Image (tube, rainbow, N blue to C red; front, side, top):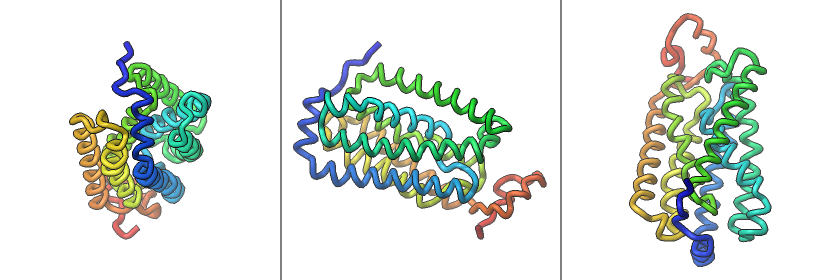
Length: 256
């Protein structure tokens, strides 16, 4: 079943043209904050020999962003609007960074996330997960009737907030995580994404359900930020103590 689109392309293009300055400012801010999360996440992943973005969130981002980029002809010929063409370039950069995140999961975190003992096992397991997430994303896309991927993008930005808290609780420390990433996430996925970008795309994106989703997403992001402040810092120097049977929180250090 395909849901009838809740907006039309000409309608949204009209709102974009009427609010181009605001969308350029807030859209650029949203992209910069997203780049901070992913680029700094890559650095933290190498630093802690871990991964900074939860596995399922990474798989969702990769499915969303690659599908967006692969529809090059649709954006450049059918839609042919600078706002979406620029977004396609941004998505292409994200895809490259996400490949690094995936490599870190397979290389450093395969045992933590249950992908297998060897890199080959982890690679096969991750590919299977990615294919499954891709199918689910395409299924979701086919039902939404979302010709400009605006709803798909909104859904994709909540995935880190949904899985960051369980990842932090499992690790018991700031391993592979950063307050810089958490602050960028809290600002970008709630206040900027839902309340500074979407309102300029038309009244459909100011319905009570959208406002409620934005509030919920912001609350989740700031709860994760608060929990991360309280979590012990991670030091690779204490990682070997895990063999003593101590819990992660007990062996983490606040000095690292």
